[in-house]
Length: 346
Ligand SMILES: C[S@@+](CC[C@H](N)C(=O)[O-])C[C@H]1O[C@@H](n2cnc3c(N)ncnc32)[C@H](O)[C@@H]1O
Image (cartoon, rainbow, N blue to C red; front, top):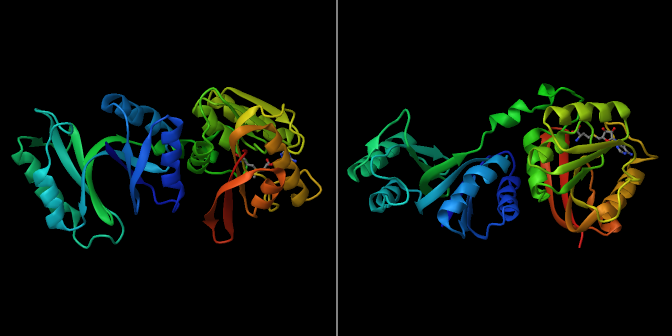
C-alpha cells in the first residue's frame, strides 16, 4: 500500500531520511516508491488496519520534519486534465465510507504547477460528490489532499504531525535556558536518525541544557547526559524533570565517559564549536579526538552516533574506528552552517 509523507522544507535531505529511519524503528518493511519536492511516497508492507494504527500513533508522534501522512489513491502528471482523470476513476472503497462527508484541499509545491489550486479542489469535489458523498468544508470526516509537486499525489489524510508541540518546547519556554541549543525539531530529527528506541540507552556527552535528551526522553529512551559545567547539569535536570524523562546526569568530561564499553545504543551530541560554548579541554582538536574515541568505546556494535559541529567531525570519528554513513550541512544563519555527521560502529 502506498503512503505519502508531506515533508517540511526546513532541510533538503533530513525530512525524508527521518521518515525512513522511523519506519525502520517501527519495524515496518518498505520500499521507496518516489521522492518528489516536499513529498516522499513509500510502499509499506503489512496488514492495513495495524499499519495505519502505527502510522497514526507512533510514527506521527515521532516525526518532526513531516506535516501530514496520506494514504495514496493515485499519482498522476501535474496537469489539471490528468488529475481530474485520476479523481474520476478512483474507487471510494478503503478511502471513504457511505455516509461520510469530505473536503478537498490542494497544496501547491513551489513552482511545480502554474494553475491555481482552488478551482481544482472544486472540480475534484464534484467528482467525489457524483460518487455519492457530501462535501463538508468545516468539519469533514475525510480530507482528500492533492500534493501538486513534480507529479501530483492524490490521497486521504490519515494524520498530521503536531508541529506546535515542538514550538512549545523551544529553549526559551523550558524551565532552564542557556544559549546555543539546537531547536527541538532538529534535535528530534537527529534522535530519530540515531534509531533511538523506547527503553534503550541514549547518551549525549555534551548535554548542555538537555535539548537533545528531552527529545529522546519523550520517545521513551533512558537518557544519560554529561556536561563539564555544574550549572548546566543542574539546568539539564530541571528541563528533564519538566518532561518526566527517565534520566541520569553527570558533571564530567566527554573524553572520560564513566560508562562500560558497548553499553549505549545511540548517541546524538552537539559539542562546543569554540565560539560561545565553554570548552573543557586543551583545544577543540583534543576534545573532538578524545570524545569520539570514548563514544566509539561506549557504543554497542551496530549503534549510531550523530555529531553536530561547525567543523568536519568525520576525521575524528574515522580515526576512532567509526564508519561515516552520511554527512549533511545545515545552514543556521549567514555565518553558521552546521555539519551533521552520522556514524555507525560496525
Ligand atoms: C553546544 S553546547 C551543547 C548544547 C546542548 N545541545 C543543549 O541542548 O543545551 C556544548 C556543551 O559542551 C559542554 N562541554 C564543554 N567541554 C566539555 C567536556 N570536555 N566534556 C563535557 N562537556 C563539555 C559545555 O559546557 C556546553 O554545555
